[in-house]
Amino acid sequence: KQQNTNGDGNETGPRLPYRRYYTENKTEIKVGKQATDNDVLSLSPEHRSGAHWWYHASGCPGSHVVLCTDDASPNDNDVRDAAALAALKSKCIGQSVIKVSMTRCRNVSKPPGAKPGLVQLGGDVKTITLKKDEVMKRTERLEETVIVN
Image (cartoon, rainbow, N blue to C red; front, side, top):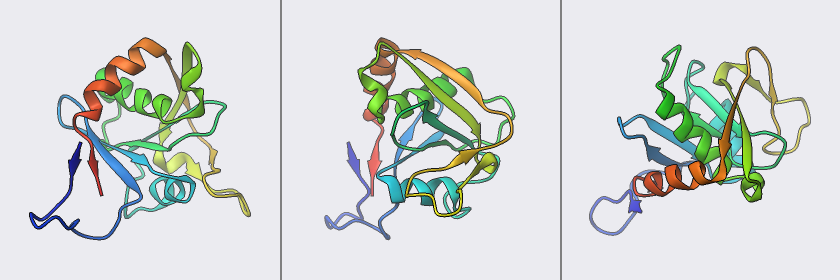
């Protein structure tokens, strides 16, 4: 795991609400650290484009994940890497098969009065289905790329 440092042991810049991972072709994936961070990552244009892709394990609490590409049809390996991180960083990880929702960030909104981390999805939502062994294989490689700040 890498730390984002300036060489003197101190972190550079302010704390970000996510960890950064990188796919094999160097596409950035942002993973929320906690519920309030998930809101900031998912809803703030400062941290994601409306055209970026948003992921969350279906039906259970977990991190919000953003694949930082505007591509209309992202590379399948990148999609599966982002979905694997959403699965790993969720309470669904104990299941043998995990379903992950995927949509554009612009389709994610916060219902009035909702608790931290709770969002609603509109527009086109796709489901990515992963077996736990694929999740573990992909995330083992991705954990080697993580930058925590």
